[in-house]
Length: 335
Figure 1: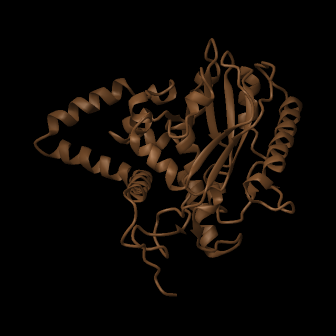
Figure 2: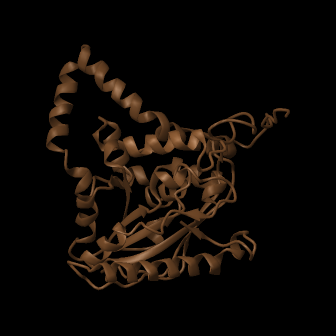
């Protein structure tokens, strides 16, 4: 296959959009490692005083990722996120108003390879979350491991990312006065291994921890479906039972991290690389499911709410799929 190169003459805005997404991919794949190396260089070199001071600060600040984080509206409103939005482009779709006196748990689907929709819509103001949902503060939950990396933790917290452990979610959903939104990519890393164009498989059938959490705190459940999320990257074939999938599953169970072997396009050509394709993303926020506060929910109550959530998510998908380019014969597959 011949390599298809990008035209030499492109508008500056297109170049800036590509640069914005390039830095995002770098941040996702390599920034944590670079931050760790920087810390070690400081610690072992002439900057050891700075490293020791930061280590002391890290000790004092250790619990912050599980206590609502430390967001920065300045970072969330960087111009780079508007170029990031326009690259795909990405759109946040509101189906109804949400009462800011409540706390919410957004279930984000599908996970995709790099959860681009969740990041762009809830960790930046590129798509205007605060204008669409005034009085609400979104927090995207991320694996606790990443908040142990020096410097990197401070950067990701500035966008509204917080730890995904139970105490972190409980802190947000139990907030007095409401206004807090915990966003969970429910399928988690395992679902990313099935993220490829055309895929509509959600790992949700036996995932009920978020349901129990919503019941314990009386937080309203909101299904969110991101149309186009799985269209951004191709992935090496890894069917169940294959050697690649077995290795990926073992890695995920051992470290909690998935390793999807994805590829898409490059910076100057369209055939191979780690940049996502320019495919539109429409992240649709559904209607809330009001949940009674039940500090000690029974298994029956959890199962019943889980069933209701699946029905509402499926309804959200079916009502919107035609508007975002999916044929009528395509349906969600819940596994």
